[in-house]
Length: 131
Image (cartoon, rainbow, N blue to C red):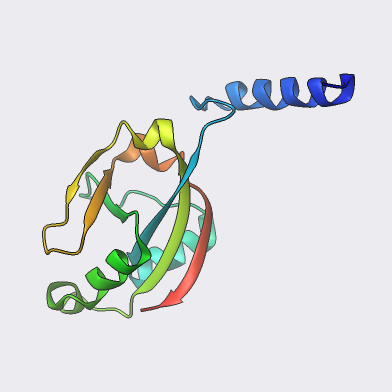
């Protein structure tokens, strides 16, 4: 490595540690998908982050876009309002590996159950669109 590249890499590592992030510099980023209601969409637009709502212990995320869209089409979710919007974020593999996971309750596919300590690591959040 050239001197400038090494210094920049060291500076980036130091900044990550200063921010309290417990990720490895070369950690793989994993795409996660979530459908959100209008209130959560507004929260994401204003804060740029997923936030845990009152009375929530986990937020459901999916590794496949199609599984998140399938959840949005479930009648149980439709009865809670809407419209629903598909969002996407990324999380370091090392953080995701500490989250609970398993099959979706309504058959929508493999689900990650992220708790408060995981949400702060979700980054690069994008609003994909209605579903």
